[in-house]
Length: 297
Image 1 (cartoon, helix red, strand yellow):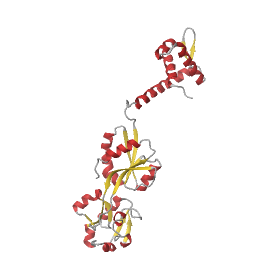
Image 2 (cartoon, helix red, strand yellow):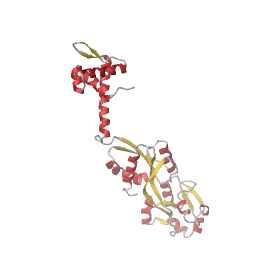
Image 3 (cartoon, one colour):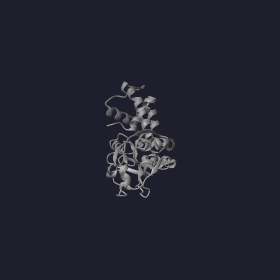
């Protein structure tokens, strides 16, 4: 069993004054009660802390060895009380936030000055990965939290919405000049590009219009990240469903052209993900609120 802080305070005061009577007055105890405190502490530790004679009090080697640690313990206990009362401000903390590469570079990294101004006690670190990888790493405590549009099925992961994500089915203008895409039947002249063979991006279109099926396309090309798909489509090497925030300049400049404009793709949400049992859940919700103020780029 560890010594209580009051016994440690009596020990430190006795070591400071080397006078039990003066020390007892300093801590507000009678000399007899003070002596019992020191005796009880020595019995608990199994060592003598003081050598006492009728003329003087001295610390033993055990007492000398213990003194600085006892002082540190009392200081830490006092700081704990002050921290609980909010007198010390938030404790410093390191947070690793994961997200996909293109969103991290275009939006999350530029948002760091805003986060740092709102949470000056937090040091932010970034991790880039895919949607499934991100939620897996949050689940395994390998990163603290993540931002992803992946739909969450794990009960231990909480997802707070921060931004709506709209999608556009697009092709490059140069490709359309050669092979128009004016109806679902024209899919046979095109290759669909997506991040995975399950076509998670293409589903935002195929789930709202059953005329548009993956089997209708001339082929499929897998490009592991949305940024890579973006470059592939710009180069005229296929068609794809891409986030509007990522390609809005291409749409404005006409280098990318929306396809089948009568079909409105489903939208999704960027979510702030964290473990429901994480004691910093309140901090994560506050971070999500701040990030919802920072526009997608």
